[in-house]
Length: 360
Ligand code: PHE
Image (cartoon, rainbow, N blue to C red; front, side, top):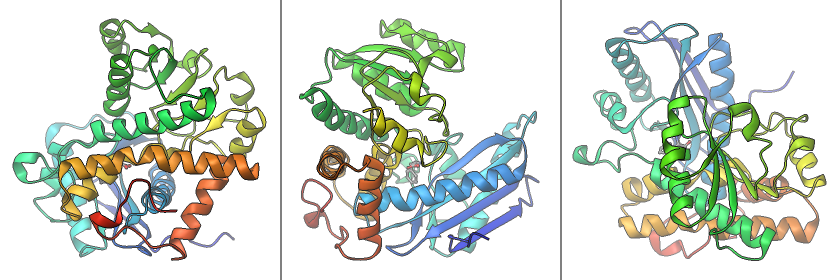
């Protein structure tokens, strides 16, 4: 039997919504846990539980790799397939989440994630102060997705520097899979930088964005294997499978979707093919770095933004170690996480301690 890796897992039926509300605290080793609230459809609530377990472990890695003094957790509201939530039931589910988070007395704070917004955080905030990214008029740092996108662009710069010898993104070709809040911002930033884009989303109305950005469009089942310099997974997880790796036509995979690897071995297969994979928990850390910077560390916006941009150096460091040791970027990043969790390296405790890159 595999042991439970998590400190605490709460699965409850929301008293107002009747929906399964799952909160997983993976680790508070480096500080109180943070991690967004995902509201998504699952065939069974146990699939939501599994997602919460995986995503919360990813949050521990995400904050640790960037040297933040926080731990990892996640909330999942598992909506049964075929059920469309009305506004009232949705708000009730958020209140149910607020109550569970409140019961944890600060061991875990939530924030937005797939399926929730900054406005939703205000509803959760009716029950608990342990919530990130409230709308600015409510004193929070607001929608984190532009900052997550900034972090993805920083990671892309490091990956392009390693792969093509220049961190300039103009003139490169990027395939973006998923044009949700983060993917949409990434596409806009890349277009503004002069890159060529192939875009895709399961929602056909996102074709409008492709038109606006003068980008090519690919169907969702074609985008992963589109010819591009870099593939950017920006939708749900599990897209990098054993089967897809031999068919990829890109030099690097760098994107914000959480849990991109269908199984850990896929990192080795990518490495064997000479495709650079930047671990998703590094590429997607911008939102949480910004929110923690502004809301917990009381940094100025400019300083929090510099923390997000430092993802470029963190990725460069991971790719350097990978190149020097012949190990995968996944292994190099994981080792950095282990070092932080074992306390061998000091975590960032004050803005002045955060000099450029996450300290090695
Ligand atoms: N949900 C996002 C993530 O996975 C961002 C986020 C979470 C931001 C929690 C703030 C707090 O990183």
